[in-house]
Image (cartoon, rainbow, N blue to C red):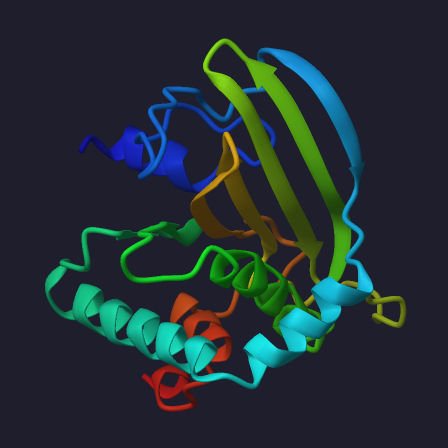
Length: 220
């Protein structure tokens, strides 16, 4: 796959472009906002959603997925290869990954829980949600739902003159795509600031360590 095609799969939070067709769906829709916008609302979880998430967080499903993600990232770092359901992009200014849902390996609710889990983990690091929304779009191929968390680094109001801001991992986008009622992809990307106002961003290894709850990776 060409470099720019890989890049487009990770970034462009407001205008994701063409993606691979998803399992259980013949949809050839893309992540652009072409089509009829049926709804655009804030993400709100019901009490049953919160109860399910609490059960999932305490289950082996979370640990199993995070262990798999950590293992695949290690392999990618070593030889540039990873599971076909997963793709990483690691370049100087943009880092991230895309996981393509496989019904034979994961439950439908695993991805929505992971989507919220990643956001919760990053909020503990001081990140705050600049965007937290759900868009439902009608297209010629069906209905597409995109859930997004766009997180920004902690606000800093007490800096001394000419003191640089700590951007941590830069701006973070987490997105969950559902096509025609079927879970499709889970994406996370970190986009760094590259100007003199900010300190250098933390390494992507450290972000993966945080997300996968594995302290050893962050020290590499």
